[in-house]
Image (cartoon, rainbow, N blue to C red; front, side, top):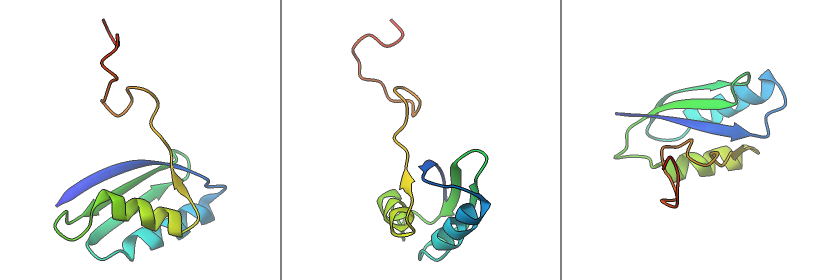
Length: 85
């Protein structure tokens, strides 16, 4: 079981968060999903043998929302060109 957190864009209110929660829960392999309108984040528990993060992204886009691109370094990745050094 994998737990992923995704930053979201395009939500206007709690109704949007509820709609997206249901869309994520409908994906085969997702065992639980919780979308926070206040934080613009989705926390998703899923079986990585049945669903990929790319499939989660597609479900979010199909529901009319998008995954926000992380701010430089926020996702733990760095360009290797002078970050922190």
